[in-house]
Amino acid sequence: MNITQTSGETKARGRMSDLKLEVVVISVKDVERSKRFYSGLGWRLDADFPVGDSFRVVQFTPPGSPASIHFGIGITSAAPGSAKGIYLIVADIEAARAELINHGADVSEIFHTAGPGTPPVDGPDPEHHSYSSFARFSDPDGNEWILQEIRARLPGRVDTDATSFASVADLAGALRRASIAHGEHEKRTGGQYDQNWPDWYAEYMASEQAGRPLPT
Image (cartoon, rainbow, N blue to C red; front, side, top):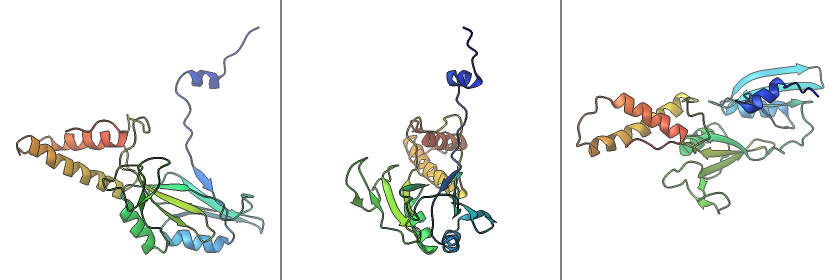
């Protein structure tokens, strides 16, 4: 018996095809109310396509996010408000919480945990360890969003050959952390001015994002 190898089987032996999460569908009761809410948060309105009275899709994208949300009429059978625990990743949870509150969201107090399955503790993680600090808010239907602070990914969770920042705020935060770390680096080297500081910054920022050991 001759067996023909498919292109899918060939890819399975090498690099898999990219599977990029594009849209999360949420269910809402009042489309116009939800549209006002998400617009008020400062999320980008990408589309609003009504087709008669039985179908309508609205797309919003959170600032700096590669993925979007859909809601509307005739796009899901889920009950309004049934989406829970949708994560929004932020580099500075205190700043992100304050911005959302200023835009009308009722955001919980920040809390942190020592690890998965451990009880929550009031306030952000004292050392701002990535994956440890959280806050919650919901839209008018009860669809729940969770803010999680991540400044450096664990090893293996990003493409180590690529460094990118989703927004100007994320890039600025990475530059500030690199600046502080570089100040300590110069102290350890006798306080001498480092002419190669751009290279040091670049290595620090790329290593932080990829979860590699940081330069000292």
